[in-house]
Length: 188
Length: 237
Image (cartoon, rainbow over all chains, first blue to last red; front, side, top):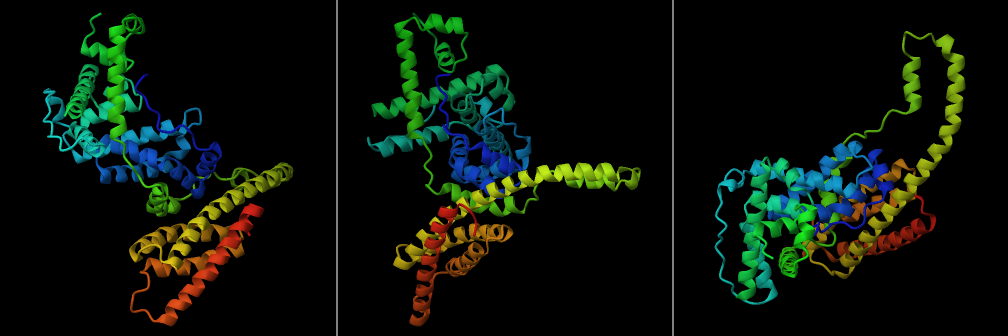
């Protein structure tokens, strides 16, 4: 897939995983040190909320620790851990009930583009940050799961309780909004 | 060749039928549109990265360590324990299985002894490496405290963070009979505790400050020595 950008090129040593599975807290600490940033970064992608991302990161590692014996070494550890991150993020957003229920009613692809105050990199970053904020939770979840995490549309739809077509349209709408924002910022 | 926006997105997302994708990619116009979409998404990706501090992993661990460490270990009972349970079951006669039991246990013990030694060595080695990393952070802290390189608030935060790890390692060192390491970590804990509870205020008396400074310097030396020793032996002492 062209759009997938793996977060972690290097997996944690299998030795740490084995030790952690045997109940060694310090081996699990190594796992936390190795993956903490990637887990938080993904949670932040899903939520665009620093505090929520922090809560999700903590919860992800606690859940991973509880479920460690269920991890099978045939799969990459990072894949397993980031799936927990994804599920935890969806749970948190559902609990927070932020726009999740309403997002599918919003078929309008238009967004209000803020007036760009400057041409420098910081202003562009802020504006694009706003663009991600302006996506609904479902749009942000769907585009991140598909584009960044490499889920298929069918898997994404199943996780988000959407039908395939609705999921596809949600992703298209998200891409349109982001590109529109980028175009406006670059031409400003 | 004309391509709809939806087709382009499906092509980009890898969701188009391979034959259809191959057909579309023969068009230079389609390739150009695809490259533009890829470039746009990459620009958005680059500009919306979430920056975290370098020591974020340590911060996160300090926040969850108590919950992780307090969870009971999920180790399966050893084979010896399983055999003991089996032997103690009332439906089996102890006398009739004693002979077989002794043979099995003897054979098992001989095999297990070797494996157990390997596990202990590995665990000890891992612990020594972790404590070395912890001592490096503590060394940085003590140096900052000595040179007043950080503000009181920063020192306090750093001390609070190190304190949790220090307690875990101290407990682990005791469990692995690392008396010297445990003693050093115990001394370190006292200093960390003082800073964690609030660095010395302006009103603290000069002798008290000098005493603290002397203890800090002495501890710094001990930390450096212990680090070298652990690196040399790769084993808890």
